[in-house]
Image (cartoon, rainbow, N blue to C red; front, side, top):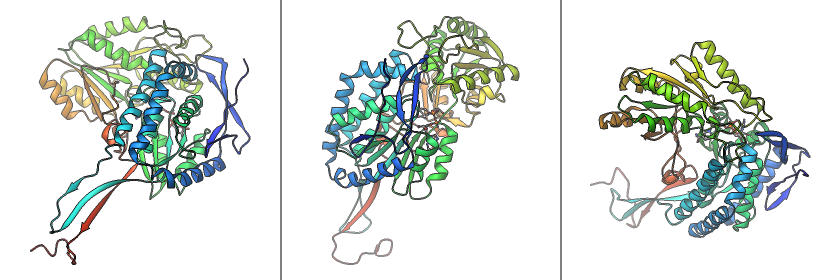
Length: 491
Ligand code: NAD
């Protein structure tokens, strides 16, 4: 089959990069299958894209938010109509199984519908004044051109989270997707165009993070950067963005599931399998640590190993596949290295750990036990199908272990005891806590984001999703007709 060459979108035109170069992306489940050739964007492309976004901002900001919402509703409609095709493209491009790529597209549909409604809210507040005949309120205003930089593991859902919030707020966008999932990004942007988004309002530049991403982050006209990706990249972006630019960071994590001695172990087992091996463990909310009460540790370990061994690796398009490939060779090497480290550190490898001889970047679902909190496999985000078990004597110890990492995105506890539940809600230092459910499963109408090194306080989705993208301006209207001095003329 001939391989298509795809373009970048600047000011409503699909064009080649100024670099004159392209790169190929292959199917991670079968690396002899080329998905397409994509533009190797560069700094000049970014400059043009930012200029287009700046020009388009003047008109887009004047479009009433409910009208902007109508376009997002149309986007949701088109995503629904194309859900199956998009899901298949996604599975071929980044590997996760079809049921999960369908979920990814569904999440995009949900957030577009939710953010469309935000067009009729965008709430500010009104409040009182300490002075007579003076009115006080806040209003939300757009910022201008913003950058959305996204990873590959949710290649339509994460762009949709960011772009829908940016657009409903009245900003224009330069979108830089991961180089591993350019086709999903292009398909999503084509839908934005079809839905009637005016030219220049969203511009798409594919290409390396070090050039395209860095130029965007440093660009003086970019007013906010919304970034999801690795902690180290986020740290660099925060430094490079400089003053006068908002930076919203959604970073990695090392998420724990606590299994108490009173838990329904079969339910907990389903949660651990889904949390650890869904998306081949490549989720920011993946459950990579299981902290088990010592009374049930051995039983739970046996149950987990038995089920893990039955998971079927393969191409995500095959309905019999449970776990797809890792995204690329580098990821496979990283995960394999961590399995070696785990064994070297003295954790016990109970099952998995091998790389099957297939033409894709697979690693077997892997379970370690006897992981202690000083081990790298306990501390580091592995981002692969590797889960480790650690024993705890009681809930306090389990919570201390859960918190003993630098990250804080998602956490979970399995227990049927209300005191345990409330203690976990109060003391787990994570942006999300699930009770009797896995670490995965956010819904778009609630805030999403991490504590500690998993983020920097800006939360996406829900009513918080617009905060990064709006200036909540404070307005005082004094209609007394005389000089009134706050804090002074208060008699
Ligand atoms: P990554 O940091 O390597 O890349 C993310 C994006 O940043 C890509 O588009 C990349 O090209 C770009 N980039 C790379 N270097 C850059 C630079 N110097 N300046 C600007 N942009 C740059 O991450 P990844 O491998 O694509 O994604 C995996 C990571 O993302 C994991 O750590 C995962 O936990 C995290 N993640 C977090 C969330 C969340 O919501 N918290 C969600 C999904 C993934």
